[in-house]
Length: 492
Image (tube, rainbow, N blue to C red):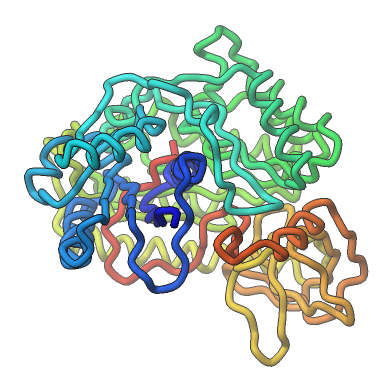
C-alpha cells in the first residue's frame, strides 16, 4: 500500500501555496493523502515564524505527535517553512523524533530527504540560504478546482523593523511574465475561473528584471486570458503603488474591484520607526485615486497597534486614517516582539494594558466603519462566485455562500436549482453585517462556468482526491479578545 501523508499549514497565503506544492511533490513520489482520523505515515508541519507564539505552537504540536510516532515506528515527521528556516537544527535537538527539517528555499528536496532519513535511520536537516528552485516549477495538488493561487515572486526587499520575513524568505525573486501567464492559462484550461496573483510585495514585481511597470502589464495580460473570470492580487506595498497599476485595475474587466493594502500605522512618526517608506498623506492619496478610478472598490488593510514609542497622538492618527479611508475590513494586530527584528530592541515598549485598550478602540471603530460600508450595498445587485466551504451555512434557509467581485462574503438563497461551486450568480442584497452580506431572494441570474464543471467532475473522484475548498481569501470578522499576532507574512 502507498504511504499516506498529511500536511498541516500555519501562517500566510505563501504557506498555503507552498503546502499545495508539498502535497504535489509527495503525490508525485507515490504518497496518498490521508483521510479520516487515522494516523498518517507522514506528517508535514509547514510553519510560520511571524507569530509571537509560533515556537510554542510548533513544539506543542510535535509533543502531541511523539506518542503516535512511538506507537508507529515507520511514521515520519517533517518540519518546513519559516520557523524551520529560522531554528534549523534546534528543532531536532528539542524534538529528536523529527525525521526531516527543510527550509523555505528547498521545498523540492522533501521526498529525497524523507527517503534519506528512512535509509540512514537518522534525522536530515537541510536549510539553504538561497532559493533552489522557484516553487511554481514544482508539482502541485491544488485545493480548489475553480480558484487558484499563482505566485509571481518570492522574498522581499523591504526592511520593515517589525518583520522577520525577509530574513527567512530572502531577497525578492521574480518569475518571468511569460511563465506566470503560462501557469494562468494552464489553470484556466483545467477549469479555474479565479486566480490570485501572490507575492510578498506584488507591485514591486519586475524589479529583478528591470521593468518597474511589469505588474500593471501583467494585470492587463491576465485580462486577455479567455475564460478567466476574476483576477485578484495580494499584497501590494503603498511605496510601489503607482498610477499605472490603478489604471490597469480600472481598465481590465476581470481585475476585481478589491484591494488589500497594508497601512500598519497612520502616524508618520511610527511609520518612520517602522521603516515604512510612505506617509499618511501618500497612503490616503492612493485610496482617493483608487476610488476615483474604481468607485465600487473595497479596500482592506493591516494595522499594528502599540508599536514601540507609539503615543496617544500617534494612535489617534491611525484612527483618523480608518475614518478617512473607510476600509471594508481591517486585520488588526497588537504589536509583539519578534526576536531578530530591530523593533524588538527599540525603547518605548508599551505596557500590555495600554496596547489592549487602544486595540479595542480600533476594533470598535473599524467594526462600525465596516458595517456602514456594507449597508451601502443593501438593495443592490452583486455578482457572486459560488464557493464550497465559505462562511456558515444557515440550516433553515439552506443558504449558499460565495464572494462578490469586491471580495465580500455573501450568503444567498439558492433558488429552485442550486448553482454549483464555481458558478456565477447575480443576487440582490437584503441585509448587511460588518463582515458579510445576505441575499434572501433567489438569484435572478445563474451562469454555469467551466469552474462549476471542474467542481462537478471533482465530485466523481475518490474522497482522498477531493475536499471542501474556499476561494483562497482570508476570513474576516471580529478578532479574538486578546490577540498578539503580527500581520500575515504575505502582507507587505
